[in-house]
Image (cartoon, rainbow, N blue to C red):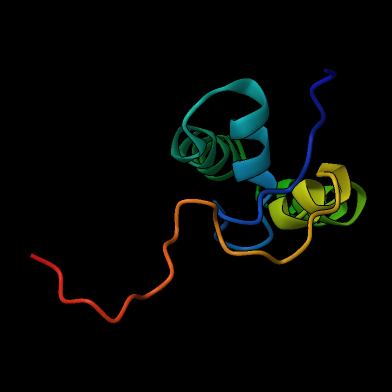
Length: 94
């Protein structure tokens, strides 16, 4: 399965760009955020970095919802109780 870059739905502060990069690179998204902040503030890259962040937030698609992925790939099943459930009986249980 091919790995794709998405904006994170769960690990986000603003729009999920840094969380998405962290998930894609298998790095803690907090490390990505700290590196972004250090580079932006101390390298004089704040305004271009902010513009880049907004552009990435528009370009990178949002992560698909998990339940939609599972629903689309799972076979259709009827709404039945699990086979392990038992019918109630009138006799007292010991």
